[in-house]
Image (tube, rainbow, N blue to C red; front, side, top):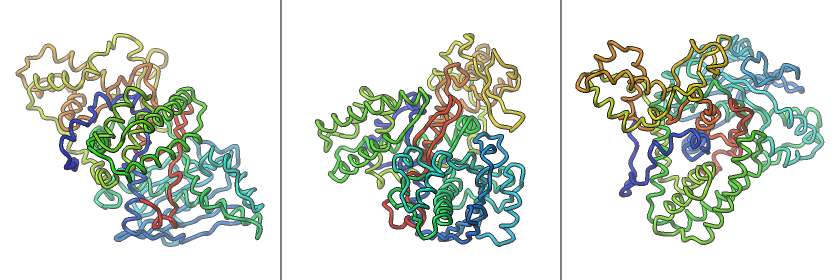
Amino acid sequence: MKTLARHNAKNVDEFRRPPEIVMRLARMGSFHQTRLSFMRTLLRRLKKENWCFERAVWEIDDQGFGRAVYSVYGPERNYSLVAFSHDLPDHMRSDRVIATAWDATFALFDGIPTTADLDRLEDNVPKQEAGRISDSELSLSRANRSVRLWQHVIENLAEGKQPDREQLESVGYLIRTTAVYGSGKFGAADRLTISQRPELSGPFQAEMLSVWLTRAFSVDLIEHIAKARGGDKAVVIEPGLRRRLGVGNSTGLGMAPFLMNHPALLNNWMASREEAIARVRSLQTANQAALDEFRRCFEAAIFNVLQWYSEHPVQIEKLENLNTDFGSISAYLDKENLTDDFPWNRLYLWSENNLSLEGQELLVSLLLEPYGELVDDLSACMDADEHLSFFIDGSMAIKQVKSIIESQCAWATSVDYEQKENRARFWYTSAEKLEPRVGERFDEPGAEYEVPLGVGYYIDQMVEALKSWDDNQIIADFLVVHPEHRHTLRRVQNLIEYPYSEIQDNLISAEMLPIDLLRCKLSFFGATKFDPRSDRWVRICMYQDAPFPHELLAAAS
């Protein structure tokens, strides 16, 4: 594990929120993107290191079908997004993981592909899971057009007009990815292949690069089709409006268990985020430049929420609360002195009693914005050597194990798991697509295939088994008799080094919302406009308002 770089301000620790506050599903399901989100980390690096970009291949016909290559050139290595655009009948367009065809498919190539590489990829990438790629590819992805926006934009550009701003902003993207696979899936390069490369060592940097270049492809493609239709009359999208286009994404249960399966990584994400917040809260004063930047970002947040739509009752209520919160924050800013006496800490403490969780966590994101020089270094602390968290200390006395549980796992042992509603769900892996799913324990078959993601329940079961053991015995003796508790003991021992590694809620409860898990992870990616389509999948937007490759070097950090 990388050690968090410590800020030199005194007593930062006293401003850090503890895990029992942060690691609750309702709060995690209200997280927003921050300066530490992976998309923003990537773009800062590319800008700082003066990466160059080229649309190296454009073999797209007038209907918009064919292949293209976007190459990026860095100080030491180069990468290329290889894109394929397909003629997809409307009836075959689906966001579901069981889809077999898409409007566009992509691979992130390690280097600059030759014609032979492109031919090989063209034979395989459009097939996605049914094809095979090699360790020369770092990610595999696919996307569908936005049915609501695609034809509207083409028709207007072809006629020499700009698309309707309100319609464009209400959708926010031209294409929507339905999967971005990396880390060895379907033959792609394993994570260890790239983990020591500075530009890709952080979490999901290859995937974020792929999505960013996919965004550029989507706009180039739609302008190309409009030009083919409209000829000299056609226009391109005005730069300010173009910036409002991101990349959509549909994400379901397949992503949800990631946070439980990678506790050390989750800890480092959370600990870095909380360290950043604590650093800002610990500041005794704020200068005028910081105040101006905070107010600018606050106004931008209000504007962005006006374009954030959802039809799901959970998110509708959150958005209503958020709009009320904006009024409360505005009133606070008008009457309070924000220059001294720990202004940001006072604002945060006020928010705990006056704002919804959605508002509190948006405020947390805004607090970091003026202080890049103070917090951006923490992005280097968000990866993890997960092998180090895999070992079990068998020499630990049972009384010490009990002590850890008593001090850090009350959230697990305080639940009555005899009540059906507290064990209503079970996690399993589907046979059809090998994707994570959630079943209803008392209404559906398959509980015998449960995977152990209900961490709280397993901690409670281990506590019960430990009751008959002497406190002075070592835990290795216990595991010889009860090997079924090895995975639970490992998680408990990890809490010593990784206090933010466990979600402190019952993950098999009838009240558990998988979309909270999705929202948390996607916020670390840098996603916006969370739009749940059920309690189990969500649509988002990525890279909205970010610079395009040709704009990056001139963009603000």
